[in-house]
Image (cartoon, rainbow, N blue to C red):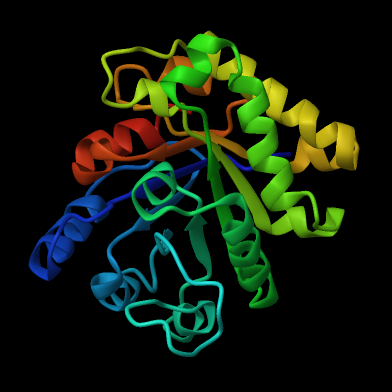
Length: 249
């Protein structure tokens, strides 16, 4: 059975005291669902977050990593560095990394390989822009992002990969993605996996939705058969809202 996962991407928010406060608030919340819970603080606060949650059920994950193991890459962080402080899962390919830092399918394929070589779990993100959706090319864009970055892998690798669909056009644009649109794309993603790796692999991979999930829409979105959880942005910065989403399952 596929895992339900709710991951909070804190992005470039929260200094150390704010991180500690939010973790304290998260630990006060009641959890009534079976969902795995993850949070992704900034690099500077990963170790403190990991230490604070070492004995808890909330997993601390990273927002990004470099494909090289070490070397002259000023400001970058490698998979082995993350592993050395207890981080086992990393987000790769987030739409903001693609848009603002020019990450490509090719560079992401190298990051995927580096993460898997270090026995890390990956939350791999992808999704189309508004122009792609309006032109009707949204499925083609998503298919190419998945194939270019992941389809060089053997089927066994998908035991360590979670997919996260981000309709970029529905985040901060005034446009709204319906639960039905989310389901349609998730079903297409699962079919794309099945066509390459077979139904067993496709049915085993969790696919998260990253399109502005909030407490008031999480239950309907998570109720769709191919939506296995959410990659949460803004709502992850408020403990009560985040756990309202976690408990929507």
